[in-house]
Length: 351
Ligand SMILES: NC(=O)c1ccc[n+]([C@@H]2O[C@H](COP(=O)([O-])OP(=O)(O)OC[C@H]3O[C@@H](n4cnc5c(N)ncnc54)[C@H](O)[C@@H]3O)[C@@H](O)[C@H]2O)c1
Image (cartoon, rainbow, N blue to C red; front, top):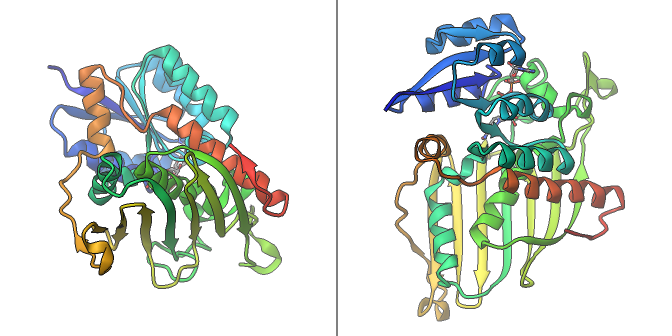
């Protein structure tokens, strides 16, 4: 079987994770990169030994010698750069959030379906073994009917420079500015934690209310061309189909947590706790007969194939793979309604 030829679109920070993941797979070749930033593209190609480079989507499509695209551009660029590849019949793994509005995300989903290509959103935490084991246990009815949950995604890159100085680097500054297409912490990592909680529950969101907060971070609220107006923290209330109720929150000011996710979810027959902290995942459960003593135990979680591996599997096997663009559009609807809720002082919104 011939190699699957992958093109990396956008060669900034996260593109390195995509390139390393593909490089570790047999039968996959990274054939090209695209970035309008010539120096960044050159460095990326040298670092990952990528033979071809283009500065525009049009030039790469005119060349055409690739099967699949990993779209690792900034959020606001996903829509405009993905559509030409779908029209050209290329498979696309797109970074999250799929787009910056439900309308754009739904159009991407419809066009991907019509093109008959493999389409996937890189919701990275689907790679967490504990999340997948929790989802399987809940689907098997092990904790009964879901009643209550709390989910948190905690980062702190605005309080310490573990990932670089946010006030000096474009990769952090665009994430703080709505004019640069960012929907703040809600669009950046809110999409992950909403997916994390609802994927585990196996339930759709029924309604949502949300408050967004933006803190003062620089004199005059701007640094160079970046107006720092995107939200830094959010707190959301969410109901799921079937009536479960819960809270979901995220922040870039969680001093003491660099990149940690957690979910505690409770049903009529038991509770589960999923933690992903310092890149380690852990699942704990309290199930009958331990409910009377509230004794929790660790649950073994088998490894999972990563999004990158499952994307390539689906191209090889001709199947579809999840989370697909349709899932990305559903999540985007929740995010859009969260913004609408905040604009109305936290008013509840039906999904
Ligand atoms: N799944 C995850 O866990 C995860 C983690 C980090 C980032 N991300 C996502 O990855 C994406 C990129 O984030 P990043 O941190 O790498 O940002 P970045 O700013 O470091 O890199 C983005 C790159 O895209 C390039 N670019 C801009 N417009 C382009 C265009 N029209 N065509 C080609 N390239 C273009 C930029 O020049 C830059 O090099 C974002 O959507 C982000 O949300 C996902």
